[in-house]
Structures are given as C-alpha cells and as structure tokens.
Length: 240
Image 1 (cartoon, rainbow, N blue to C red):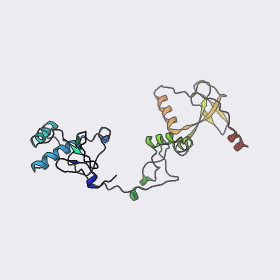
Image 2 (image 1 turned 60 degrees about the vertical axis):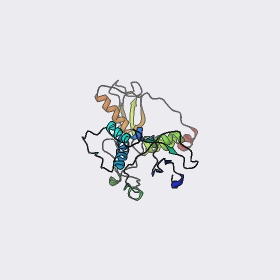
Image 3 (image 1 turned 45 degrees about the vertical axis):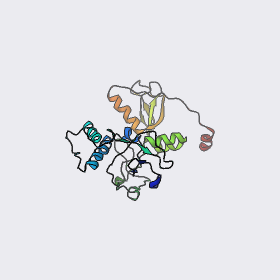
Image 4 (image 1 turned 180 degrees about the vertical axis):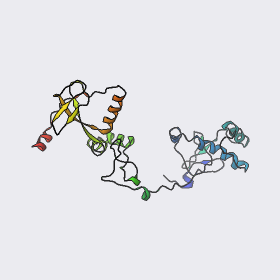
C-alpha cells in the first residue's frame, strides 16, 4: 500500500516515515537487531557520529537508550505522531527510527519453474528439491492449510500422495504388521503371527512406510488396523 507524503503520519519535527512496518513481524521473525539499529541510528544521526555495530562490542540497549535520552528523545525511541488525514494526535506512541534498507535481488523471472515428471529422492521416493535439479514445487504446511480451508480434499490427496510417493503394502489383518507379498507366486505371509490368508492391500505414502520400518528397527511395532470399505456408486460404475 502506498500513500502520498501529506497523508502519512508525521512527528512534532515534521518527519514522515518512508516505511510503516507491521509490528506482528517482530515476534515472528525476531529481528531484534533492526530495533536496536533504529535507536542506534537515531543517536548517530542526531550526534553526527558513526554507530559501532560490530560483533563482540560492549554496546547495550541501556547505553544507547541513555544516549538517546540525552539527545532529548524518549529512551526507547518512541515518538508522538499525528494523523495525516485528520491532523489529530495519535493516542499510541510510535516506535520510529532510521533503518538501512536494500532492494532484494529476487525476481519472479529468475524463480519461475514447473515440472511434470522428474527425478525422485532415493530415500523417500518423493520428488527431488530445487529447480536446478528439475525438482518438484514445494507444497508446504501453509499450502496444505489453504487447501484444507478451501475444502479441496481431492486436490490435497493428489498433491501430497498420488503425485508424490504413493506406495502399496500388504498388511496382516490379524496383527496389523506389514506382511511379505510375492505377487508373481500369489503367496503372502506375516512374519509376526505366521498368518498366510488374512492379508489385505493398503496404499500409504512411502515416507510412512519408511517411518514404520525405522520404528521397527528401534523395537517399536506400529500396527495398521484395516477395515473393508464398500465401493461407492461412482466406483461401481467405473468398475463396470
């Protein structure tokens, strides 16, 4: 959002800010150095000196605050500001100070990337990472939450399962452990309970199968409880 200078809030000295930052960015990104730079920059600008911001110096927030107070400002860098539209005094104190900003070199044209089929990771069998390796597009937690909020369950399953690392395993219905299956000989066996008949086919992510096997290596046996699901009318039509 951009405003003309006359619509921006101003201080008693007539200074208008170039950028107004949402304060919710501070606890989330934890850029405390930016806040310290604001009050240090204020002192340096008023005194006409350079501020020492090198590592391992004895500069503390209290020392900077005392120097700022000597310059006639509020100790923590807060100032009274006035509304640019109405001219009325704002009821809240506003944290204000000079901070160095640079333009980022990240451009959309440099980042645009797409992929149909491509390489997968050996360990997880999920798509490789990065445009340089012809990897898949990252579908993270926030994207997942958006799809859940939109109710797009089928698309969510397609992205995170069907088009990622779908895998077929055979599970023992008696004990719930992953069974051994030889599809060519049509023979099945559960090494846990020696069951050879009550074994069903289940589709899970390969990463899930990998986790189960890692837990089994730690003597923790994850078990899958299976239940027969009756096909829907649409599934019956497709089968016919």
